[in-house]
Image 1 (cartoon, rainbow, N blue to C red):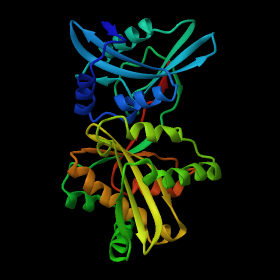
Image 2 (image 1 turned 90 degrees about the vertical axis):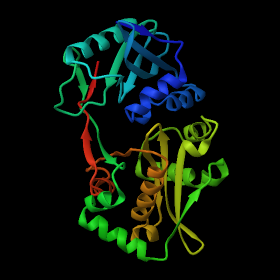
Image 3 (image 1 turned 60 degrees about the vertical axis):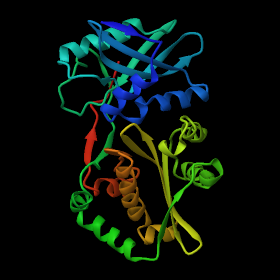
Image 4 (image 1 turned 180 degrees about the vertical axis):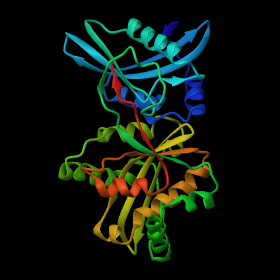
Length: 306
């Protein structure tokens, strides 16, 4: 196994990521946006007999001059199917060649479902896996609609029959700033965590065509904004990242209509997979139910390993 930690080609990285409908955390733009915020990022490509078998993006957290930990979230992305014992060699090669000084650790939270065979067994699990909802939007809209849980579909029908209007929000900072301001406020009120607010500006502008990086939809009732959702696009996948609703928007099920319209538009852009984001049935039970009732697949990751 040979590991290359530099000299990567953007187009090649994108091609592998796109083919796998890879997670946001493994997208080139995710790393480059964090770099602009001063977060160290490492990228690795692993070759076996001259052929790439995996690529992985790491976010680095330093402990002053003592050392650092490199975190690979929802990666590596495999270029082809490997037996668990070969996967183990990839992890070993990454850990051995990690280009950090001092005390160094490598932690990986791979895109592996709980109970699925993997090459992590020689490593030690330190955290249980998070859960998210993955929605296959490559299916015909009629099939996606038929998979909706009954109550979710009823809420959607009600929103469709209402006077709510859904609009696409532009990609200029001033056009979506109000949504991020609301996101910042609700994080404080609900004690939520998330990507740094400035990250979104960096991500939107990370490519020459910002409209290909982001989709923000807003619902209005008359002249009033009542709800909005922001989706980050990465290759042939997208991730629901920011959502806000007023009390009126909640009563009218505005998010049901916004999500449905977002699915329609993302499909038109060639997006195959929509990651609805983490589900927490304890702290955010209502949001979790909203996501799970879409008929998407609940993916619980195997955990974080060192």
